[in-house]
Length: 115
Image 1 (spheres, helix red, strand yellow):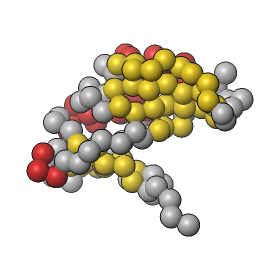
Image 2: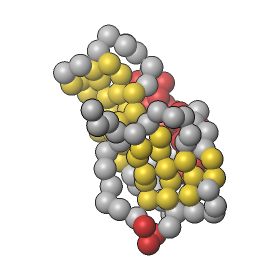
Image 3: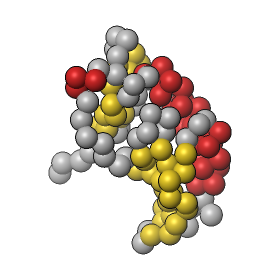
Image 4: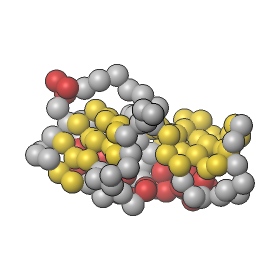
């Protein structure tokens, strides 16, 4: 079965975006030159592409977390902006936010977790 294994975000400031995601989610990145960095977990990874000639349209990555309220606070503390407050959906709860570059993402917990 096909599955999502990588999300690439176009960014103007690779070091700044790395700092945001490291501070918010504790992720670490591997640099591939000055214009690219990627997580290297072997699961679903995220790349930060600083080469404007390669930028694509934006998508909504959804990040599953353990504690939704703690993550919301960390997003705000790291400079993110909440675009849709916490809401329930079938199977869990989530909120949407913009990172410092302006990408919109979501953080979610499964039903019964992080409440």
